[in-house]
Length: 433
Ligand code: DSN
Image (cartoon, rainbow, N blue to C red; front, side):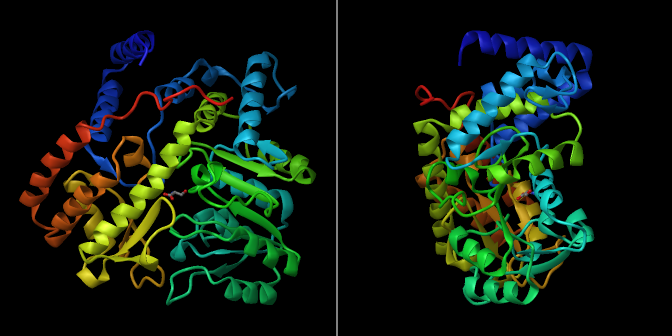
């Protein structure tokens, strides 16, 4: 990393420590936690110093309700440039996107905006059930979507634990949805967006593809793109895409006005200009060969970790993974996700308890854990390292209440993690654009 960047960072840390020592300590502790632990949360990642810098930039001072060239505030000339840059790079990353809105504060708000743009209260949404791998904002009963719309759910096949497109088509014919949502937070297999589009066309529904989890894979061709097929594509920018926290919508031109209105003033006021700037930086990084190599490493390490855990006798839901994540079914071990998550955390291995398909447990207990490799791949851990991580997981889950064992593993994990520092830069060569 450039010395100037390092000095700037140290100066900013010193200023924070002088103004607010309590918060400076909390941030230092969190930095140490992230450095010493192995993070297997499928939806998290570690951003570059450049993304972090833009995210914590002077744009946090600016109000910019509206869109580039059409703001409700003066002084927006530089915000306009930043937002246009983010839009232009998003179009390059996802060819075929006719319109881009980079303002949603989150993936949930991106999904809400699509719903607000094209649905009336009471309209029917067909989406994947949260308990089968879907997302809250696709229509959970306690989410706004579940309160405003009639939600009909699809899930995975009980035997294969994969999407069954004939079964989904049958449900669609019966419920005649106005919107079908394809996309998941805990599904380890390829999603056939073309099949979803055929179903949507047959029943006269619009199609929303939520690619929050797999956006990096889609951008680099490792997962089929929904773009020729879906009317709307939503994503977060902080998962496999490795940007700052936030959301984004891509859509057909004919929906551009409705989407922009739904985001602002429909759901939000001022955009988070600093996060839009950071998104632009992340998109620039994502347009490189090194990012494509990184995405390949995510997929390869996920497959290697699943295979190594399988060799330890764990049951992998659906038998494996095609993407960045997979679910372990802990019922054969007599464990719950809650117990496993806590035991692994004591050993410095961070993952989240997760419902598995047809789970008999509640969402707060669960029968599974979700494991993903975006962060470990960012830290340069490779396929060979996955055997070691699987061995640690197996050791801990053999005796989840054994705190001495957890302590021993924790020390080994911390040494290993420290040897794979969180990178300051991911650019191994010049961006392609
Ligand atoms: N909560 C996110 C996840 O962990 O998958 C989805 O928004």
